[in-house]
Image (cartoon, rainbow, N blue to C red; front, side):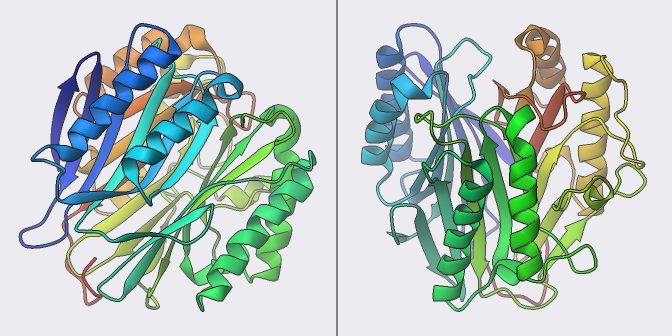
Length: 380
């Protein structure tokens, strides 16, 4: 993995590049900006992204997916979405209120593929097809019925129909989901119930597998939306191409405490392995919180758990493409930021205010890694 920074005006874009010889390149980029009003920060970030995409680094790449992370979605989302969508074209654009904790009002996470022909399928999903695979990027699926259980069920029904319409299904083709939940301490149980019911109908059980996921606090611009779904799915996968990570010496099965997601997933291609790690906290292999109330110890145990999952997927910190870290308390940002700056100095990462689904967890992180790997499956 190659790490670089691109500076334009008051904005900085940190990015990682994975590009095997003569194969398709991938870029994960994170745009951040400091200082000024939201409008000034949006203009600065937009200018930086536009110039980055035109630079020699990214000019042959297209944006397949973007997540716009905002400090106040009710007042910012409309302007931010309009600006970012104009820049990236057909890529799917997600947004969520999870205030970045570096005193900025906006951060933008971008995923780029080299030579990609990105097609917008509908208001929520874009797709890239190549080498027998179709990658589906689903962003900000919502329903404004103000009932988290019903909302989540409708969101998963949308994803199910999207895949069925393309001769796919959730069990075999959905690689990753994100659930952003307003007031997660109150509403997460409804997400868990709706997800379990949908998975049961789709043959996803503790004896088969679940889906790598993050369930985290996050707000929409509408007060009536209490759950938001993002998802990543791949068509064309063969049996055995997608596998799951457990790190059972460090972590328990999520089913032990009644939830239905996997700790991590890896997908093999002929020229690389994608490793996607769920939201991971400070937990042991019995499901207990490690170092309750101690943010420093929880941060280190969280990182240790992620490293164990990466190692099971034959990768490590040097293969990370990006990280998103979630904190329950803004007062913990300085110490966490210091640990991250030392441990992940070159990796694109953002730390946001977003309480985790279990109050005792003070911190959680998710990430993706890409590593050189040879297999009998098709090229990415």
